[in-house]
Figure 1 (cartoon, helix red, strand yellow):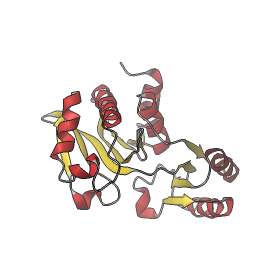
Figure 2 (tube, helix red, strand yellow):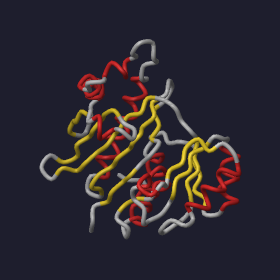
Figure 3 (cartoon, rainbow, N blue to C red):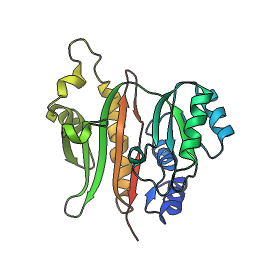
Figure 4 (cartoon, one colour):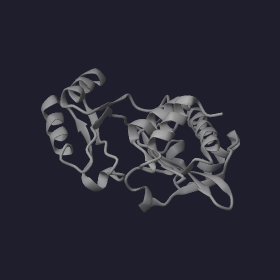
Amino acid sequence: MLKKSIRSILASSQKQGWVLEPEAKRLLSLAGLAVPNFKWASKLEGALKAAQRIGYPVVAKIVSPQVLHKSDVGGVVTYIDNDAALKKVFQRFSKLKGFAGILVEEMLAGIELIVGAKIDHQFGPVILLGIGGTEAELYGDTSLRMAPLQETDVAAMVKCLRAHQFLEGYRGSAPVNMPELTRFMMAFSDIVMKLENRIESIDLNPVMCLADRCVAADARIMLKQE
């Protein structure tokens, strides 16, 4: 059964048809998935306080119900390292369509993966794992499984990737923490099954896999239209 707080997020997002990123990350966190340390600020003063609390450098993203693809409007800025730079970004974002504030969050480094789910009209929930980041579509290196996942599915999905050696540690690079990736994927599968009748798709890109955890650095949840 869905938690009351998750049902509330879905209900408040239904009008626009998708969940704003801060709320999407709150939903994921409630479902047991790791997300960056973040703050949604509608005023400059709040954004500056958030950055100081999180610690520079930070990422800033536009929050707008009229901007679904943030990168297309220059709505994502990384490696902001001081108050003056954040102020400039805030002022620019505030002129974008539907501005409702900015998301200030911690910078993360690690192997970039894409994790997604789509509710197929024939097969039901289908889960995707692949090489992520801004070039994810260019790589097209993904594997699919029908939900719900079993733990053995995650290792099998990794093995199906052409770049699986990259995740397993390649030429001295640190491997992905497989127990943490498995835990992340199982929690994702669980929430997808619970949301099956309420969503069309979920895209988490990138999911940053670090030595000790996997974190959903970006989240897009498209809702089923009532």
